[in-house]
Length: 586
Image (cartoon, rainbow, N blue to C red; front, side):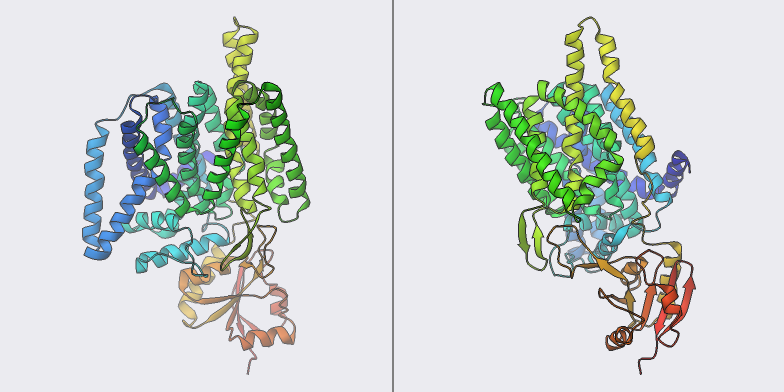
């Protein structure tokens, strides 16, 4: 399929939803831009302001969402929506008149955003529903919040990514949109805008627009992360990266104290608000901020050492990283972390390996901080903790660490490109143009690698729902009684080294039955043998009325069920979805 045509078709199909999302995000960006201008004045360049504010939109939008829902719950939906619309229009009228200057790097970022939106939306041409099992739970919690206007909770009664659910709910509530439509489109928009916010750090550190733009390109299309998060249904984790980028950028300003004549109190208030709201979106963001804080302190100490000891510290980091990767590789549960980067990102890893010495030479302190963050993140996989309601866990799980690795690697690549440019210029001062052209070769390598290895469409591993499943669910909604209890296939879930064997999840379209049509579902226990009398008796004892068999590799074996008509009677059949009534329980 032609990815460009698919992207434009999807943009057309989701045009109104995209327009509403971009409108609210643009408003949030403009409000954040104005707040940052009050803090920093005319210090940052236009492109730097845009890069920093495009990651801070979630703060004003979050406040707007809380205000909308609070007023609506007290005075009614009409009053809440009128007030929310008035705030949008009045603030836009005031802020747009004060928009800053235009520049070539700013235009390059806008062009990157436009191209990214087209490429990212191609994903939706093959997406039936949001991928994997997490998405069904997010859908349920959002629907619950919209119906009750109460904070959504998960099965253990704990808060479950409340920030994401409230933000999605505000789009659905204010614009009267469909939850699934907003989830799908919002995820692709976040993927498109996310890399733009890394321009700020590299531009301030290096002074080179090319290095900053390379970081944006590398973060957007150089790695399988963060785009693979949508295959896992990790929508809150993806959204939390917006906050992580924003807090990291503000943290960099504090790290490079003296770059701007900033107003201290508003600056630290904004930084604290960013940390707080990001934690509401994804709690493990706090661990990442702690990792960066530790790396910052160690980097400050390392800077005071003489050059010989500084070299030793770099060697020590690489040694620790290598040892950790060996342990990760030897763990069947954690091995996917290495596999994800080894299989599709090997050329990008090689590029970073080439560029890193230049980053260390010309941007030693920040390069040290970034390199140190890698083993610190991985160490979170081995630190045990106990969370009430969840049992034994580790400080970070494998998907989260896998997700975060792209961030320090991308910034390191931008610093390395800056160092390479400076090295070539110093080597041959009269070769300024050839040096700059040579430095642009990494751009071509990233684009070439993306064209070969980057996945723009949903992965077959994680698209659990087909149109057959939707037809089966629609049939159940019309046919089955409200008290039906449906058995769905399950498998063990392992994302940490300490995962309990009892942790199970659905493996096919059956996970969407309860969220979409409010019929009760029961996960099949591990080791259930449906062809044995004990297995059939267990179903009867739990008052299970039906069995759902999807079309995934771990779904129930339909040939086995078809061979036992006295126990399981097919009532609905399509190639990738079958529904059986449990019989013979008298």
